[in-house]
Length: 169
Image (cartoon, rainbow, N blue to C red):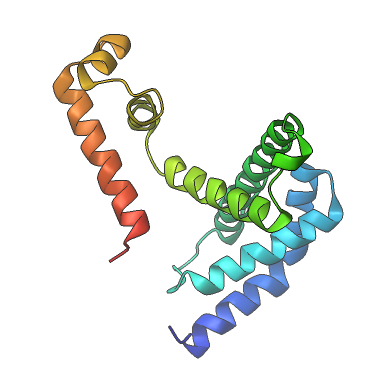
């Protein structure tokens, strides 16, 4: 999608006026200036991609939200990579995947994590109990003290969400 000149100008103005503030915000959260600079840049790239840019009455609040979400994704990715490295350390060297395969696996896990983050807490828990633990809807309902109907509706919502993530309209 092509950007309208006034939208480019708006993002450019936000960048000039608030880039330093976003970097400081992220530096406090991350404790690392280089990573803060990277995520600040990603914040403004996200604004350019998410068009049209809404009218901003409180630009710093909006920038804080975007930057904080990117920071959360960064921390989730770091935790994922750490857990993956720990699980790889337990494998025999001959069973270790190649660096290319490792990267593909991490990217896939990160994408799955982002999709699951889009679900509400209860819906995500129901979905994971079904998909990872193999529990039936009545078993999930009993464990979470819900009706089977609530579990069915939550699963339908989760499956629609996953479908939309894979096959966007």
